[in-house]
Image (tube, rainbow, N blue to C red; front, side, top):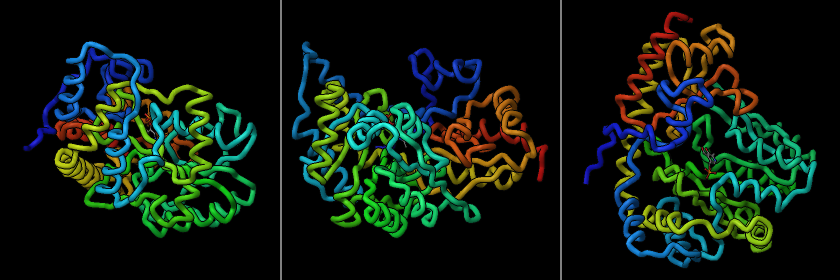
Length: 393
Ligand SMILES: Cc1ncc(COP(=O)(O)O)c(C=O)c1O
């Protein structure tokens, strides 16, 4: 079956954050929305059908996560990522960010230190700061157009006694698919310093141009014992509204601590019936659809990078290997950050993510969500060209 990702699906009026919630952040709902990280494509039919089927039964009472739920996850990570896990390593969480918050609670006390690697997904900062823990930054470094881990700085930061490192693998917003050697070096340094790695792998299925994801925990038994993996079908299959994700933890002691917070502390272990049904359908029937999605996203990413290089050279793009989120540097325009932000909204009428939310290194950068029909991507690029090409370097 050939899926049609060119279709424009009207989302306005569905209470979706990306369209209907735009005014709150950009002053009006009339911009082209290329911000929130969900996709403008249909959630695949095999997921919608599975949800409809469940609605044929008239009772929506409490339910249990079944072995089918856990087996679907284990089968998926083995098939897609060559990662063999036991089903009893799996915990449910209603989202990756709630999982990160619970993990912070489980392993740290107020004022304890936690490492993050900016520019990085902004809720990493929130789950630390809002729980009164201390952020330690180990910023990524830039080599030409490639973001890298800064191991020398990491070792210094680990010496300060951090209990956790929250890793974005692959990295949002810079789009790196971390290589096994990079992940091994990071994980071994953390092991040496008794710092647990929390590997947020929510974008792990979204590999561009045939890149291969490496599950951090898959590198060795010792690394697996020191790593907590957070994954979800939400980004991959456009079902974030179902609030369903999985935490995979080999280390039994670590797993029990997280489970205690989720179950006895926050009481969020249950979730909703539709989340499990969606997850099982996605992980069971999703291969063909995902293959076609990745081809489409790869074309959108390559087309955008080519377009920017050739026609808006004042903007800079980076080595992009994963996620549908393109990281773009506007500093060549010579404008200030707020001038760029203002022009994006008021002249280009584009709603992009402001890079400053991702912390250090995000100034004068913006993130563009390319998970939409190519016609929308083209419209966005034309608007960028019209607004910024006059600032030629
Ligand atoms: C790296 C990363 N982690 C987590 C999330 C959100 O996870 P959830 O909606 O499951 O809380 C996102 C969403 O953009 C993300 O990019």
